[in-house]
Amino acid sequence: MPSSVPTATVDAIPADATLLDVREQDEWDAGHAPTARHIPMGELAARLDELPADGQVFVICRSGGRSARVTQYLNGNGWDAVNVDGGMQTWSALGQPVVSSSGQDPQVI
Image (cartoon, rainbow, N blue to C red):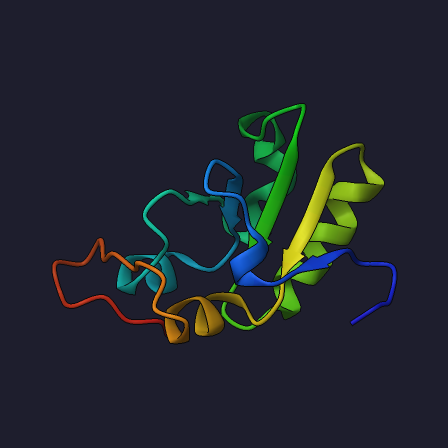
């Protein structure tokens, strides 16, 4: 991961933060943070208007790779974005809430 990408640990994310999940639809459906916004990485450029223009955006994926690229992109285009270290795998491992859109027990895939 490039050193120019700001990163935060899961426990450093403010409770009222904007959390952007950039994983694919099947990953989101299986399990996601209850307050996250979902915009898959491949759709981001066309959906930038869905992001707040002010305040930090914490970007999360499965393990941190995709979210690091999205963080770098957003910061290069005027947002204040921060990559979530370890992604949803760490989020779940630390006991943070995970919900499912699939009707099954939530899981991080």
